[in-house]
Image (cartoon, rainbow, N blue to C red):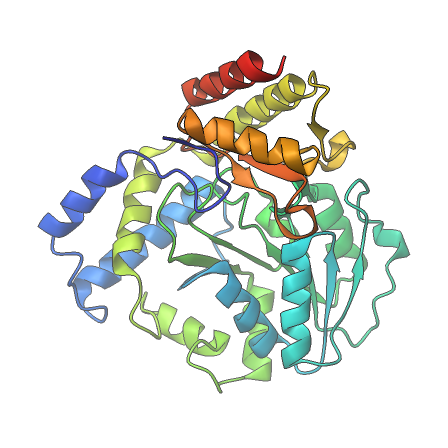
Length: 353
């Protein structure tokens, strides 16, 4: 089965070997307060910083998912309000969840074919955290590094948090341009679900210490204090952390992965742009995602395409949110090989040209 679902997506085939090695090395039942886990945790943090170009003074934490990071950041870095900039379902869900915890949270929606207009944003001075999605999986849009930097510079006194779930470990993100970044590993990391990566700047840690919120098991200050010794507050997903270590060791550095994914994204957009029965959902090239391609058609054709593809052992991603019935999605993640995309192209050429 060729899997182009945008998460959980295809895992690296080497994971099978990693799993056997984890069993043989006693990783699966290693005490999470023991030296074996501490050494594993230290190695992964170091490898993440080297391989993904994360600043050395940023802190890295292990969580259960990116969704858990939504909760951690709102409860630990805001007392009253956050501000959410979104154009799709996941950004909106983060906003709606924040309002349940902090009723004064506010936000603004922007169009899927427009870049964020930083100069036009009206964010009050008492806002503690600005939240956005770098790569909106539901509609295949992205926010550029320049936009994130402009946001960070204009609202310099406010922390900026970026959900990078569908781009971290695939694109060369400029971590220095925001205070907080996070993702889950079931997309560009090419690993099974169940592990989140949370990255915080020294400024974010300083703010967390000032607020000193300790009412939850996953409070950021508690995470930070435990991670000083490369431990977690809860029993972690030790197996997935081990898989992450092995994956990082065997993959190219992020600059090379970014080049490869960007080139392949351009090829995919050019290829799918030739069809007339369906079209690219995002017309503005500037805001198109490099890792999730979204195609739009009438509901009947969308269902027909997905069924025909499945019959040929090709799994396409369903539409999501408002675009659930009239779109399908194609992941452009590192674990999916070029030859698999050639097979995907042959399928579409055979049936729809």
